[in-house]
Structure formats: structure tokens, C-alpha cells
Length: 474
Ligand SMILES: [Fe+2]
Ligand SMILES: [Fe+2]
Image 1 (cartoon, rainbow, N blue to C red):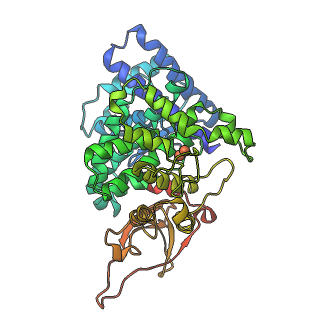
Image 2 (spheres, rainbow, N blue to C red):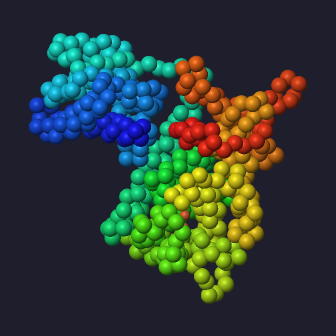
Image 3 (cartoon, helix red, strand yellow):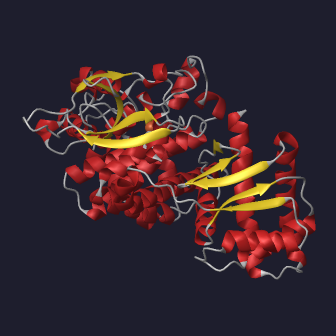
């Protein structure tokens, strides 16, 4: 129900976005507008029929449909962002649709809205009066309220990076989805866009890796393949940065990681998403994905963007340190550096993501423990050490219990190797109205006597506490 409403809400905002854009191009009499007006009407009226009065409201960066926060969707992300900006510029924070809407009403409203002067405080009142003078009683608007809170000081300086991070993250997911769809349909796939996005991500990772690392907590069950590719790329880039790679090599690594499972696009969906164990035939097919990936990569039109390092990285990302794994080799070779990096990122992300055959995934801590147990056989021990240094003993996104009995989420790891157990933690709490508050604390803070103010007692399982970790990173 909640998901359904979220979907319809995102749909509504996206259509509002289109309408807004179109009305900036054409005048209100233009017939080109009709189709978009009608599409918006269809969605809004469906929602009104279902829930009566419909309020669409912005609080901070989020849209709320009748008090329910709309979850981000990959497709809708850019529209939602843009609509929010347009509303804020005009200082409108809420639009209420009270009764079923007609074409003329909506047409009048959208132009009145678009023509509001940016940054003018009187806008909400002005718009109300305009609607009234046109006997429009079915739409009401309210001013945008700037929410002040403790978090503001922190978000202000972080805001830009975080916004950039979200944009890169969702855009990359959208682009990899496009690439995979095109490859499936044997169509032209443009990977130059992936390259540009990888470069942007590298820029951000160098500035502050914790932002993109936090985004890897958004585990999207339905869009596993796309999210997974992006997450593996983020982990790989952060490792590459620590290994001192140049921007050029980092770009290659980023693209290789994004494409590492591209061979899976040739494997039938039923096999990929099979809930039970695979038959030996299916498993054989599955094991071919690195090789099929190589074939796809070599067939890419912009082959100039690809070099042997990248091809080999795709080829051996399931080849273990002891050369077990797949594809089976007839000659002994060393697993490539890209392959070894991607392998660690790949295993960690796969283990910490819920899958159709394993609904409750490992916590970050459990996943690291498994990897450490298998380290000499499966992973490059040195790279694994770097990876652990990167995600911390308490990886970003771990739910932790503090000695003060407060619960928090690890937000950013400590760069000092001696202080890996003292990350920045986001306290999970609720204010009087029951909405989540965000307070960041630094576990290296001490009191006057020099004792640490907070320490981590243990990690907790977010599934047991019904805490949606991803929410805190958006
Ligand atoms: Fe793979
Ligand atoms: Fe993978």
C-alpha cells in the first residue's frame, strides 16, 4: 500500500515536472499542452478518488503525499529534484488538490504558478488570490517552510556534496540500466556516458568518499543488478584511491566495475532470479557470465574507451586467489589487480544485499567476518585489509549500540587506522512528533577528564529493529 502510494506520488511529481517544462515553452492556448494536462489529470484524479483531499508538500528535500514521504525512484529522481527546486524558488511548499480537477482549472493553475516571480515572499498569497478571482476552489497552496534544526549546520556545509553524490548515484544507476537494456536488445550502447559519470564519482570520492559509500546502503531489491554494479564501482574506486591510482586508472577501474557483470545480461531472468538452487545446467550457464562479459565489452562500439586491463578485470572477477572459482583456467595465471579489487567489492555487496533466495542479508560486520575467514583462499589478503580499513571495523551503515544505551548508525569511518572503532555516528532518535531526528556525534570526542564520551558496545541487526538504514543516507 505504502509502496503503491509512493509510486503514484512519484508519478504525480514527474507529470507535474513535464507540465511545468512544457508550459514554459508553449502559451496556455497551445494544443501541444493538452496531452500533458490530461495525463496529469488522470493521475491526480485517480489519487483524489482514492484518498479524498490530496496534499503534495515539500519538507526539506523530500516530497510528502498526504504526510507520507515519497521514496526516491531511479526514474523519477531528476524530475523530483527539479520540481522541488522550482517550488522552493517560488517559495511554494504545498499544493492541495481538494476535489476532482478539470482541464481549465489545471491549465490556469499551472500558468499562474509558472509566472510567479522567483524569491518573492508574497507568492503563496498572490497565487491564492489569483485562484480565488478565477473561482477556483479546488486548489490551495501554502508557503514553503524552511525547517530549522540542529542538523542544519551540518547539512549546510555537506549539502552540496551530498546532493552531487545523490545525483551521480541515481544517474549512474539509470545509465547502467540503459546500457544493459540496449545490450540485451542488441542495440547500440553508449558507454561514454558511463565514463563521464565515473569521472564525476572519482572527483567526489577524492573529496569525501563517505558520501558515496553511504549511498551503497540503498539496497534496492527490485533493481539488484543496477544497484549492485554501481555499489561495486563505488567500493572499487574508494579502494583504488587508497592504492594511489591516478585519475586515469581510477576511471578505467570505475568503468570495469560498472560493467563487471554485464555478461549476466545474456542470462535469462528466470535463472538470475531463481529462488531455489540452480540446476547444474543453470549453474554452468551462470558461470559463463565473465566470459560473455568479455565478449560484450569487446563488441562495444566505443572500443577506444576500453583497454586490456579492463577486459581482463571483467574476465577474472570470479577467479579466486587460489585460482578456484571460474572461468576454469588451463594455464596458471595471476588474477589481475582490477579483478582482485572488484572481487572483494563484489562479494561484500552481494552478501550485504537482500536477494530473492536470501531475504535477510548479512550485516556489514558479518559479511566482513565471512570474508576474513576465507581470506587466504579467496581474496588478496592485502587488498582485503585495505577494504576493511575503508569500511572500518564498523562499516558505514552498521547499526550500533553505544555505551550510553543510545542507538546509532555508523555514518563515516575514522581515517586514523588506530581509531577504526571510533567513527562518526548518527544517533537514531525520534522527536516529540515521532519523526526521525539526525544528530551526528564523533566518537573521538572526550569529556573534560579526557574520557571518551561515547563508545560502541556492539552492533545490532537493523532487521530486528525495523530500521531502514538507507533512509539515513538520502
Ligand atoms: Fe559476477
Ligand atoms: Fe557481481
